[in-house]
Image (cartoon, rainbow, N blue to C red):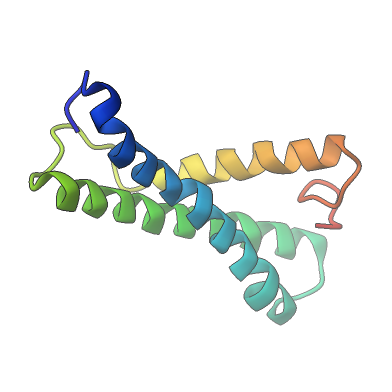
Length: 114
């Protein structure tokens, strides 16, 4: 996606932004519904596996963003972050999201109810 593309670049930018937004939601649901029931009930185990799931999921979402950008533009983007940046970014996104839930008094990563 060329910089300065203006309004014409919005559809592609929106599609790429949906990878961490929508995909992150599915990573979290996968942990809650598939992984959490199958691991030990200890708080530190649950938290560690959840963060690991966020990291691995974020790496896959980053790969999805990359290949979507390549498919949309027919070339490899000039500068693309390292593979692990997606994992670290999704961990940050999820921690902020769960902080908002915690501040609202809902179940979250921080209080072990979410």
